[in-house]
Image 1 (cartoon, rainbow, N blue to C red):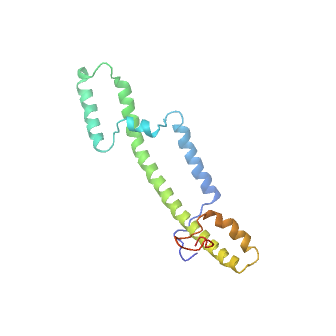
Image 2: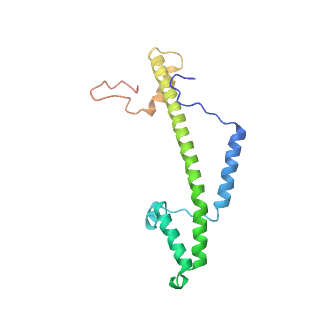
Image 3: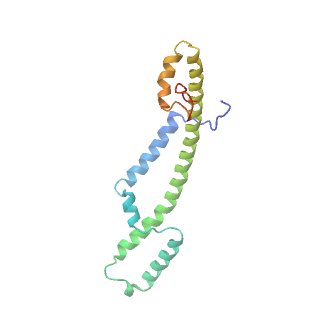
Length: 163
C-alpha cells in the first residue's frame, strides 16, 4: 500500500454483477413511472419536503374531513394516489441518496489515489527522461501533453514542464 493511499477498495466480478442487477431492478420498476425534468422545469414546480410534509398532511386530513370544501377540479382519487406514491418514494430516495453519496465519496478518494500515483509515475519518468533512460523520453513526451502549460510559473524558463 502506498504511503499516501487514502482508500483501498476492490469489488469481485460477482459483487459488481449484483450491484448492476439491483440497479437494473430499480431502473425497470421506475422505467414507465419516473419522469426526467430539465433544471428549468425543476424550478417551475413546488417541492414537498420536510416542513411542507406536515402542512400537506394537514391539508389532506381536512380534505377528507370536509369533502364539501374541495374544489370540483381536484380529483381526490388522483390526489390520494399522488400522496401515497410520494410517501412511498421518500424513504427510498433517502436511501438512494445515502448510497449515491457513499459511492461518490469512495470514488473521489479512489480518483485521488489514482491521480497521485499517476503523478508520481509521471515525475519519475520526467526525471528518467532527463538522463535519457531507455523509453523514458518518449513516455514523458506523451504524458506531458496533459500539462500544456508545462507547470511554468510567470517568469520561469520556457523549457520547464509540469511538476
